Each structure stands twice: as C-alpha cells, then as structure tokens.
Image 1 (cartoon, helix red, strand yellow):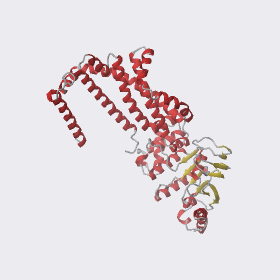
Image 2: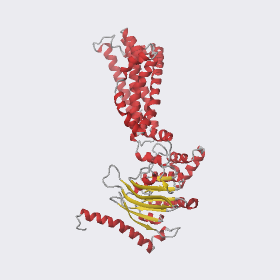
Image 3: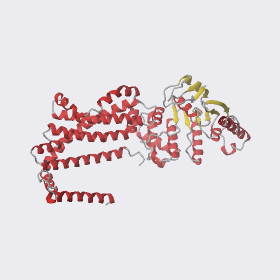
Image 4: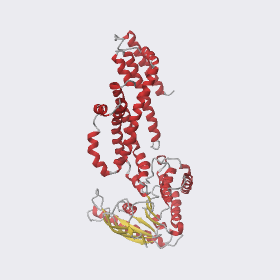
Length: 268
Length: 248
C-alpha cells in the first residue's frame, strides 16, 4: 500500500519562470526506502517540501495513506539541506525540543536521557551544551539527523542529510539510518534526496532519477541487491556497476543535451 | 588595567582638570552659571538624600511605563509579524500612529488620567511602545524561513511557535528596538517630571533652575547622565546574555 502518493503533481514558484516540478507521479510504499538523485534545480528538494506539507502543489494531488496530505506534523520527520537547527538552542536543547513535541508529558529527566542517547548515537555527546554557531557544518548536520531520529516518525524525508558530513562519519550515519529504517519491524518509510549515486545504491530499494528544467522524473530504477548489503563487496559486483552506469548516463544525457543547446546544436 | 580603561581614566581626569581650571579663573565665566567641579561634587554629597528619593520616584515611573510597553508590544508584535494578513491590515495604522511624537499626547493624558503618575506612565508607555512593536514585527519577518519550516515540520503548536521560535528568532531586532525605547522613555520621563512632578530627577533640575541655582542644575544633569549610563550598561549586559547563541 502507498504511504505517500504524488499524482500528476506540478509546482510553480511565483518567482520562477520554469515550473519546479511538472506532472510528477510517484508512489512510495509502506516500509520502502526510496532515493532521489538528479542535478540541482531538478525539483528534488521541492518534492521534500511538498511531501512534508510545507507548500501546496500548484496542480495534481498528494495523498498520505490514501487520504489528502495532512498539515506538517510529527508523522513526517524532515531533515533539511541547510540543517535548520534552532540557533538559540544548544545541540541538546534542539533535540529535547523535538522530543518534547511528541512526548508533551515526559519529564525533563527522561527527555535529557533520550537526548543524550541520541547525541551519543551520532557521536556528538561532547557538543551537548554547544550552540549551532559553535559547531562545524558536518556536526550541525549530525545534530539535525539526531533531532529527526528523536521524532521516531513513520515517514522520514531527508534532503541531502549527509552532504556536509566527512567520509568516515557519513558511512557511520548511513548505517545508523538503515538501523533506524529497519527498527520497529521495518515499518518506517524513507524518502532520501542525495547527489551521491553510491549512497543511493547502498541504501535504497528504488532510485528515482530526476531531470531539471522543468523538474521531471526521468526514470525509476529498482535496486535489486539483497540486504543486508555489504558496501565494500557491493561496489565490485557487475550488476552494481551496470546500474551505476545507467544512472550516470541518464544524468549525463541530460547534461549533454543541455550543452548541445548552448553550443547551438553543433555538439561538443 | 587594560589600555582602553587607562585611556578613559586619563581622558576623564583631563576633562575634570580643564573644567576646574576654566571655572576657577582660567576663563572669564559667570561663577553662578558655571560652577566648579568641586562645588558640584559638594552638592552631590549634600543633596544625596534628595537624589536618592528622586531616583526612586523616577524609576517607578520608568519601570511601570517601560514594562507595560514590553509586555504589550512584544506579544502583539510577534502576532502581527507572524500573521501576514493581520500585518498588512494593521500597517497603515502603524504608519500613522508610530511617528507621532508622544509628547503631543500629554494634554490628553493629563485631561483623561486622574494623577500625574498615571499620566506620566501613560506617556512613557506610548513612547516605548512603538519602537518595540515595530522592531518586533520586523524581527519576526527576519526569522529565516527554513527555521519556521523546521518548526512546522516538528508539529509545534501556536504557543510554542510564539515563545520558543518567533520570540528568540526576533530577539536581535527586539533588543535594538528596546534600546531606542529605553532612551526615549528616559527623555519622556524627565520631560514629564519637568512639567508637573513634585519629585524625581527632572523635577530636581527644573525646581532649582526656577531659583537660578545653576550649581544644583549641573549636579542634577550629572546624576541624570550617570543614571542613563548605568541603565544602558545593564541593558547591554542583558542583551549579551539573551544573544549568547550568536556567533561572536
């Protein structure tokens, strides 16, 4: 059954000339891990905002569990590209604040303990009392991820959550994300926007390839590798390499067509 | 002592010496209009009880007028800044009422309110209200949209949105408005006291100028200056604390 359903959805920003999204249809099934890849301006981030319910579509409809998409709320945890931690709250306070929203009756001590566990999970216990301005971009992103984990939501919408994180922590966080996804009997649904094809291939059940100007879905590719996946073996498998190349050529094709336009159709 | 503090002490001493020399025969000045610093210092000591009671009565007016402005202007500003429709509807009113100098309301305050105290508190309130209100509204507008989205995605209710997101988010602007309000309140306070009070710092200066007692006028002015300095210093410390999350 579909958890989230985009039905011929278009989105036009009042400021933009081209629509950000044009007639996009996508079904995300319960418990599915879907990754979206594509160049900038292809509408990946707009799709996140739409699914979160932060902006309404200009045309088409969005359903959640078969019903019109409800207001933004704790049923969909969002990690934004720019982290969006509250700068006036310390790392610990940011997480306790998120926990407080879903557990209004919890005691301060309970919240503090859960927050400490979550920060420890992303390796940032020493930063509990630090304000976001005192943390590096990568650290802020890790706090934002911990804050999203705090919500323990059935649906996770993640907009390049690991973009600013260094390679070592990224691997750790990807595995944490998989742990979160499989927790509670694999009932969680994840929609992940990334520019890292390997990340998408390692994590996702399906990969949605977006193309820009206007944002459209070019192709949806299933990722057939069995789980648990082992990243260091996976990258050497011929099927992996073939799929990776297919995605790359889908993205590059678009790029080449663009370049030809610039060169006046004479090719490069 | 740091370089800056040393410079400041030096400059202050130099100013006092110049003042002393100028008033003790260095320049052909009227002794009654330009008292020497020593004379003023003696008066400050002599009138210390009058100054203490004047300070107390001035602070009462200032406290009630300013606090009233803070507890009304900030919540209203948060609401108006957040609700776009309300903001657009209210904008012309703000544009008309905001720039009116509060002293023009003095006749009405005196006619409508029973006591001098109530009238002064009202005038101080009006003067302090607008800078705080206008800055709170613009402060809310300046909060990054991503943070509001973030809060909405967490599912915060309206009250939490106001107190935990909009209020701290608008705080840098609110504190700027608060400085303007504080200075304006003090000006209005002394003006009101000079018009109709029987105590207070403004009253002290006005009362003794009526007797042409200029040494006491100068002493009063100095006390007012020091009071404003102490107030603004505390205000800056409070601002620093409230904005401790900002990158220094």
